Image 1 (tube, rainbow, N blue to C red):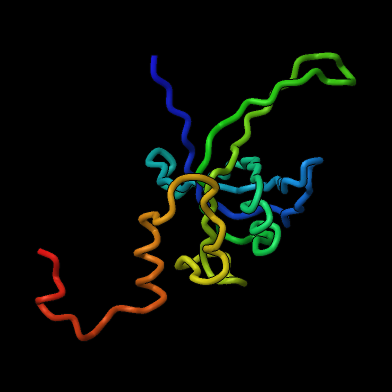
Image 2: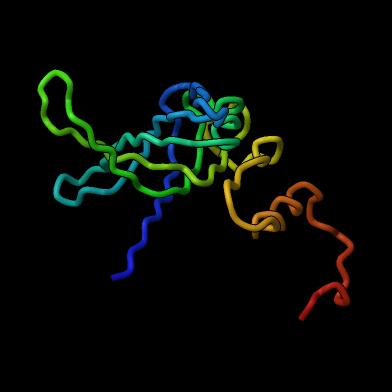
Length: 160
């Protein structure tokens, strides 16, 4: 049977990230992410909101970038996978478990001091892909925002 483990979250960082390094020199950081969901409750005739708090772990360059540029309240998009951690509680001896997201791609949203808004275009886009080929689809979008739309486009420039 096939399986698929992919998570995409947009939320706000709940605490300043703290980068740590493991024995082999690889950076790791844990983030708290608050993800809001709003809906209209027809029975109570009011707008409702719920917040889910998610633990996210970033590794390598992603962890270093998060430590350098993310802070509490900053909006971020995380793509990753779910991982279940299990252990025995030292105090009670009972089996414990926790579901977390292992971040594979991080995109900072909003400006540097901003809690939201349009994606920022600057140093935050460096080192965001942890794997995969270079030349991602986002490269075209990034170059568009960096250079701005061209006002002297002719029909000869259109590829179709």
